[in-house]
Image (cartoon, one colour):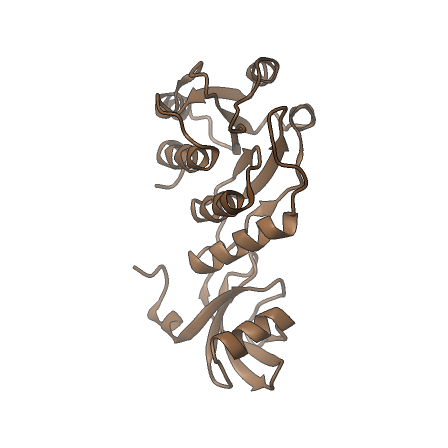
Length: 253
């Protein structure tokens, strides 16, 4: 089912572009986007594309000029106005490349506003490429009809993360030791208290948090310790399960 008017069916592709969008706006896509439209999608003058930038809603644009390596777009009509996203971050200990890509893609589909890797004592991944995470989030947003791309924040150590945490943002701490309440029950209890506002979901490494890290997280007044049931979940599965539970209890499902 489409989320907007049938006029969007004119668009052969949907792309995020970090440029102002309004009626009559003339846009010159990047070389990569131009290559995709011209060579991969075989588009030409008169073809349409849906554009969004995370601020101005979604616009239908037409290709008005095209050469072998570049093209020009003109925005014609707004398909959807901009709307506010839910403010929930995914904070997770990074894992291997393919599964890291999967987390970025699926977290975007599930509506996160921010993605932040956190380095724990048992994290076994070294240097991260923020641009790779962002590229996966961008592609997922283009495909799943989002109007925004989640912010990709730089990785930091767990103690640094907690030391600089905004206490107004609740932290759903997914504890593999099953020391918290069942996630859905804990979040429903929070919901009944009317504690709306920004949230984050914290997923640990595949080896789990160590005892000192677990104790440090639990003593934070904004932390809501939960468990995700009796089954052993891989980190990417845990992230998707936790986001799904949060959406049911506190999100827009």
